[in-house]
Length: 269
Length: 328
Image 1: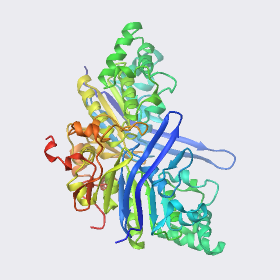
Image 2: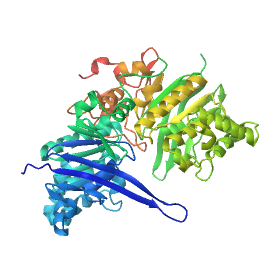
Image 3: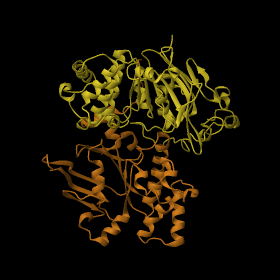
Image 4: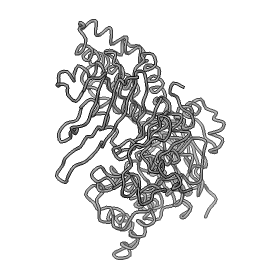
């Protein structure tokens, strides 16, 4: 294992162009502006921001699902955007993503057991009976009954679907997971189950996480460091305790104050 | 004290090929003038169907079962003709829903949509209704209301769209406002602004409000009393401070423990095992018993009713009868 951070983001910017049709001039949207970040091995970095802040765009760029307008991303010291196809394939196995909406990211007509098996076969890691055994292990690992192997996504609850999404991401033994709002669509009682699962998996497999969320309260349970993103820029970055106890940027302060308190109440009192 | 809105044994069912879905199964509560009642429940708890049922906005194959009683100022809403019901909706009881983008008509200017509601209920001219629309937009904190009155919904942010929805709901000075997840689709900072606005508007107008949310924190900000919904029923009902300080139902306790809180980081969250049951087949006995850490034999077979756990504090739990059964 080398000393370089697992993920290095160097001055990444991403501009989307839109319009330019019959009536309007083309408009440029600077979704990510000059962002630099590093994520150490085994670390969980929380990336917090509201919709439109650029956090999802940044996550996609890390996985080379989007090309940055400028800047570069290094994974384990390698420039992600300079890799040839064969090298990229190897890289894709090492970094995976879990989406907010497991229902939208799973094929509705594919049994969930097969959905988890697919990446194993695609990466030529397992075949035949060995693949079946591995899928069964993965189901057990994420707390899903094997009885569910042959069900379709719509037959599962939101929490179960998210577990399938996690099993699928884990199947190829990645080192790095981008968790893009992994519990935002779940009910509170189920949210806690999935957050606990993510904590266990991180320890068991020494995973590195980029945990993207709009909710500071959710991020704090996993993230050792938190980056706050606002209008495409990182406006604050620091250890979790620092951010919560002594937020520096006015936007972070506002974000913290906006979280509904559970220990006090409004009402007419 | 007579209730402004009184609901007794409300049952709403949906029939499909496979059977009957009891989405709302015996809900009773009173809403007093000027009071804010928070209703908290997870998805599948029946809270939104309950809100729609209050205004009889349930279409086939859904139906509000006979025996359900909804009285507004003593008038039986279940017995009203469709025309009489329409006069009450909007004029007496206003509603705000989760997704303003889906509730607003995309091809009509927002001012027209507000004026439309006003003119459906009040004898005003087009010009007068427009003036009133501008005033309303100003009251709900829309900047430059004279300009925004001519905006189309897509030209407004989610927060502004929700303010427009609130302006429509307030347009005829209703006595009751039903807000179903009014801030769920919004960003945290915008959510805080809208909640503040709701609190302000309802206080100034002395409006009674039913605030429905999956988020205890949201409800905590505004509600005088809170009712917790689970499995199509209310399982706990108490004054807001008391509910947070001394919850009696194991589900409420678990919900409070499971919620991640800013500044209180723990190694493991107290998760509630299992998942929300399906309305197609509620568990026998107490509907929470499969997930409850205190459950014993009685809970599996005998369904508890709402039991008194204190002054104006009710809970649907056998622990009230047998407190020694509580496991530590």
